[in-house]
Length: 320
Length: 320
Image (cartoon, rainbow over all chains, first blue to last red; front, side):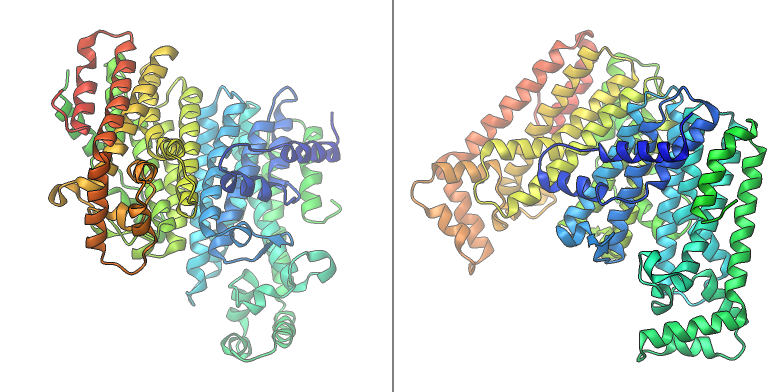
């Protein structure tokens, strides 16, 4: 049996080996460019780990590549919508080429994702693609909700949780369910692993929101305080608005002329004062534990679950 | 056996019955909006007609809907790229909503296209989707080539034919091949019907280019002369540039201050003088006849081919 590190390395090699060829180059170059920007390849790793739980004798790599290529499709199109200039420190596709090239090469990545599934010659292709389609549409719903929330001032915490569930967590759950299905897991076990993935995905996104605010700038990779600067309606922001009776936080959100550093520092102080950091941790823990309970319910022996547990713990930077 | 008109009516009803439900409405409303703008539904009709050639006992409707929904995805994204304000006399999605909504609802239509294939529970789903993916990627290649050609002044006639083959004809061929596959045609017959579709598709696109120039404004539906006004490098334009030794045509293309009506009239006269209209007809005919030869080669009795022949003739506005 392979170690977690070996699985991760294998998946990274598989993704790195993807090289689409064809004409015109304005279509194919951006597809290869975005795929080779790197990244931790978390989603395809989860496909493999989920599949390994049920069978060692399967080829889940095509499905894993499909999920990663789909994820990259979303990155290319989201970056247009968010007008993002950089992705992993490099120019985004629409910046390096233009919006039209980004739309079309993104579309082509989505089609290629389906093509990778076909490579797998899966006997239960219909069931596998059904999970994938449901997940893919939900990711689109999440992205649209995220954009809608930017101009709304009545977003609730449950709406926010639903949005991040759709935008980011269902793909983790879907990746695992797909891994389970290509390894011929039972329908019940496939559901359990889906719930494990969605809940760990939620915990992971809430952790990302937390780190965006309280993370170590050296380790976080993105600008710390970005969510605060853009008034992003995260769990922390929404909870703080609910608890802040002084109106101090609302004051900061309404101001247009301020120093960003000053704002980030002031909002962080408000969060600390209201205990928002602790509440965020508590919520993260709830989802994480809920996820582990679903994993526990899967009918394979506990030894086989070790690697998935280790991977989840690694994601959540925990020792257990 | 159903008549051609009955098949067309059934397909139109099937497409009209599509109504995607879900939240948020900014994602789902545009998907339903573009699908209900109408149109002749040529592509899903060809799926049905091709399937009927090989089997009466099949349900090709899911595949037909998939192809039509895919076509609508291309319309939504192409309209963003071409900055088109109107589609069938109504506002395009990006005009009625915005670019981001059009990108995301287009993406969702592409995913839904795959979902329709799953509805069919096709035993040979892998083979069906393989044809669909190849076709879909080629349509993207064609759109990118079309955009590239706008800024190139060395486009050759064979490059133009290859571009329209990819952008429009392979979808007609692909639709027919998919229809054949869901009706369990042999691989050889599926190839013949693909060639029939591609060649008739080429003839149809060349006819569309011809009508853009010489069509009856009452019947054409689009602005007659639009290609001439925008210096579009069609077969007629490229052939005329090749044959025009006077430099008169090049003169018209270079001018920036002119009356559009005057330009259209002058270029049409040049075309007539050089016999371009006749050459366009000849090329159309070549592809049309080549298509009919492929249809002839299919190993079913000739009576069953009558409806497909009649449909092709109707497309080409011919009596035979």
